[in-house]
Image (cartoon, rainbow, N blue to C red; front, side):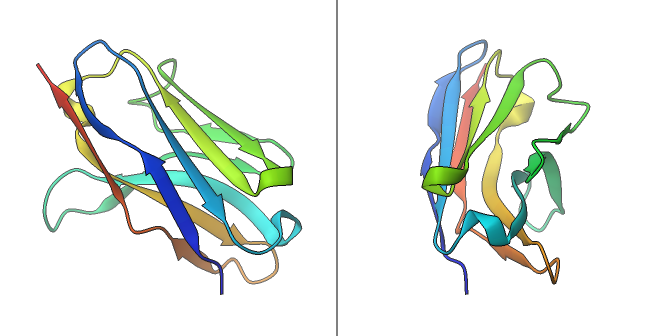
Length: 118
């Protein structure tokens, strides 16, 4: 069982920056990837924002490319998301995700709200 603890998020004006952080229990060597997803509407689908693999390969949603940067600290079992040039459409609940190396099982954080005002 992997537990994820998220921090960051909050209310910010459009054009500003915000950072999210997530720390996982367990060992980073057991993780295939760490990343962030978001749900923009109640009942909506959770969509990929970005992830980074254990080989430092990254993938970003087209909507955040060039604005968001994901990074991983294996020593701290942590993943961070630096968000710049935020837009109102980035408003969502952001969820930390860990995908396990051997089973590809997904673990999720509890979610943190990001609200971007216009």
